[in-house]
Image (tube, rainbow, N blue to C red; front, top):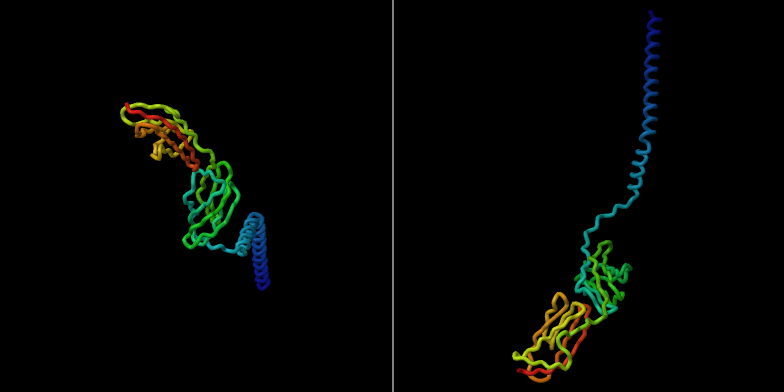
Length: 231
């Protein structure tokens, strides 16, 4: 009986040992397969953790409003101009003209900035300003030093005019948009750049002075003298 019990115990121990060995082998195989399949991903995860651990956390910056230009002309007849505007007080504003950075200024306590003697190309100039990565609206300034051409259509110097109403019509046209005056009276320019004006006159010699000023500030002038007689 004793021998039989000892045999049973041995067999039970052997069976238990076999089960443990099989379990250990199974766990080992599963671990190897898992490492092959998921090892790279786990390594990447640990790598990211390591990188992020060494990375400095940058606190979020407050939104900075973009610089705003003030009184920028559409066109100018000058090769150098001043450019002003407003931005966040006590910040550096960078000015870019036709691509490259031209200047940097510090805004004052009220946020005003002023760039002086900014050189322009003799063409269309593209301009914007920046505070850090915050960019202003892009503006264009055309360089134009050519004065408008005035052509009087219905009168010539030395003409004699006779009528009943003591008025003379002056009609003409320009080669561009401009502000027009006739003897210092404002005249409305039509969409086709032509103009007409009735000038009150008295008998005798009448001097007619037509002036035109374009958006770049170029001015031209035409003078003629006519002789008026009332019928």
